[in-house]
Image 1: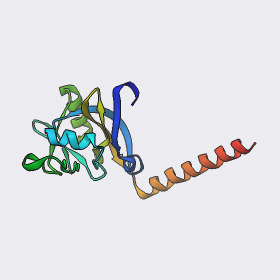
Image 2 (image 1 turned 180 degrees about the horizontal axis):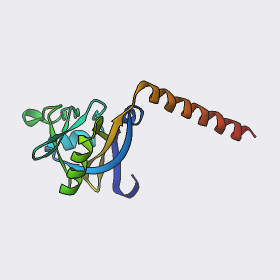
Image 3 (image 1 turned 90 degrees about the vertical axis):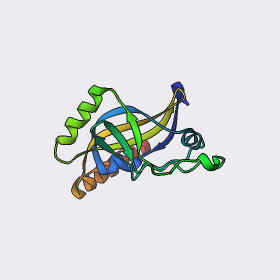
Length: 151
């Protein structure tokens, strides 16, 4: 827990599937049972995406399981959740989405100073060839590191 930040979940698949250009920190509008469930450390954002609407951004398909002690007032696990950003940041994201192939991906879900935040990124989907190139670069870097370590 460095500088008041506690990571809940990261989307490791995002770096593999997308070429990430810009990153933004957004607040989340959550219910009480959602916050308690997140404090237990359970959520999934692998299938999640950000939808740009007329009045802002929504986090779609993010799964926050129901809180065990929630009772009748529990939340729906896959409901859309409002993202809180400054107007200028929303405009940057809107302009980025207008470019062909660009999308907004949630990269990390975390608590910062007691508030739930999501790190979203503007990225372009990689083709299979690009993924192979990424794997080849990673493997060559590992080989180099092993050689340097052995000498």
